[in-house]
Length: 401
Image 1: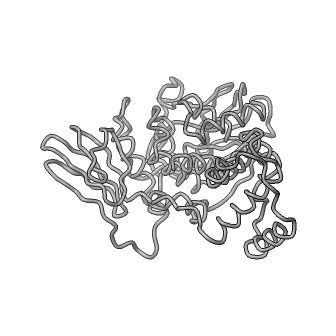
Image 2 (image 1 turned 120 degrees about the horizontal axis):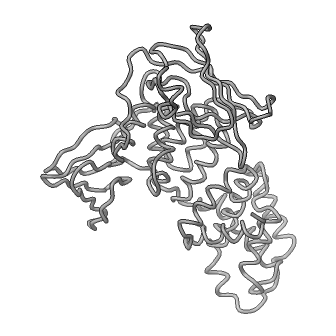
């Protein structure tokens, strides 16, 4: 994708005119850290133009430019008070922003307007902070309804709940309510009013990921460790798994194949499980040579993944199997069971992070990019120190607001 194509795609996304195909294309593009930074710059440019749109619409002729000494003083005050680590608007983003306006205003006027908008945003009236979710409801039976400001919302298999929402379940309706207090099952008939309650001074990482405003997610301690971008990102299995035949997932390069080796660290004489020339996902249970030799409970295993023919690309991770195993996932899990299983995996002691990612990354659209799925993925990627995936997911969450 060229820079021009990416800018057009970003324009449609930011204007709210994007199709589902556009959003998928953006998801793929934001996997590139350079594109992620470029999108952040374009988003800032768009916000500045949106704030100044009423002023620009009133301009029919080219006005006199702001006096140089006034503009200089204004910029000096912004730098002295805030000293941002990067320019508010880079030159490529600035040119993109101006191209949206055509010849409506002179470049000098646009520079002055954006300088005023920056000062206004930083010093006088901060941009409104999107609210934080107060809960999530996942339907298992019936058609529960949500009233928002007295207006019924359209039915949906899962919904983000905001302060003031009212959840109504008829006699045949049921589902799971996820709040800062945890997961609880609700059966109708019942009405639940969602209000702001007492919030603990110290929240767990799960609570931070699910119930923080989007603007706070990067500041919260969710990205616990970081790893270099030169290795292979392995998603599952990781840390601890309750599955004796886990799915093996990793981030693959286009058109590349991979070689796998899985070794029993506690029983080194056990022959390794090996595969060559494959791409993710690898389903342990679907391999005739593997499924007759499942992993053992309370074991420790080492997984090696490398691009075929490139031994220097090898990445190794070690994971454990739990002593007491959870029931294996069903062949065709329901949407509700997928969400609740991922949440329970992430809140287990110790967390089963890879199991949660295996579930979340197999969700169908549009549920895979719902707010609940994205926030759970953000928590998992942060716990594993997968910086690129964390930043991409964070950008997707911000797009929802």
